[in-house]
Amino acid sequence: MDRGAELYIEHGGRRLLNLASNNYLGLAGAPELRDGAIRAVQEYGASSGASRLVTGNYALYDQLDREIAAFKEQEDAVCLGSGYAANLCVLSSLADRNTVVFSDRLNHASIVDGILLSRAEHVRYRHNDLDHLAALLSKHADVPRKLVVTDTVFSMDGDVADLEALLPLCRDHGALLVLDEAHATGVLGRGRGLAHALGLQDEVDVHMGTFSKALGSYGAFIAARRDIVDGVRNFGRAFIFSTSLPPAVVGASLAALAVVRGDHSRSERLMLLTSQLRGVLRRLGFDIGSSSTQIIPILLGGNEVALAARDFLMDQGVFAPAIRPPTVPEGSARLRLSLRADLEEEDMALLCAGLEALAAQGGP
Ligand SMILES: *Cc1c(COP(=O)(O)O)cnc(C)c1O
Image (cartoon, rainbow, N blue to C red; front, side):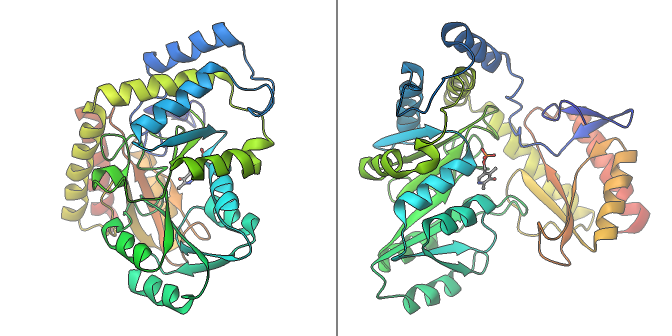
């Protein structure tokens, strides 16, 4: 596999429509981002040379922090090496051995690792099951510090967290709410994420998001109240003890933000395509679970069925990965379609023809 962010990939001598990448807006190859990266390299060189706390800080990095804080409408923000590092920092700076962290069972692995690093007690609640969460919060009523953490768009199911119900629950139980908006950033809420899509941005305590998916660049951010962001800067070991992002990446991220702030047509087109495709899949009788976003699973059950469906679609010119346990629960192997805003009519026609053939050959 080569050039895996592009709309078409070459695989085994074939040209395949790429529904496997997280380049949801098609920005990774956009001229604005290329220019942003090139300008930053020309001005600053290839490496920052150190952690931001030592000499690895540049005006460009402070600018990205400020622009993210404004974009997310938060007091402050800090940008750092990756989404993985951001979750380690958030959890290890906000939680310690006297904290209980309540985490959705389907949360990303970096959240799980962040909780482990923090030494907090890790309590998992059933996916999007807020009655279960409420019961667990009540059970830990006398714990002094509680955190609830959730992905907003779940990466293998494309469903979303129920923020409208989560917020009052957190408030009633005195828990901080931490959101991982990795798959929502650039896509929902005019690019700002699910909290903004619902108008709840002021009530959420910590907003984490990445530049590495829809924004087509690399790295991540944490936006929150000033004291929380200061905590990350002062205690987030994955921030302190790691070289800051290369200037080219920061230049590309600034350019991506400018694109997303100025023009919502990409995310709007993506949402239109996803609702069209959901309709097609349902009509063909496929089980797409509770997906409401650009990530659409086709739930198939057994591993062999999922692998056969993947190979069948490849013969039709479409690449959608087969996701199997342990990435997803036993017996829930699936194809995972990641739609993207740069799909044209003929690409959608190719995809729909492939799916119709798949439905016809074996039935869903
Ligand atoms: C991809 C992802 C991350 C990690 O982000 P990277 O920038 O790739 O390190 C964290 N959380 C979620 C939910 C993700 O999907």
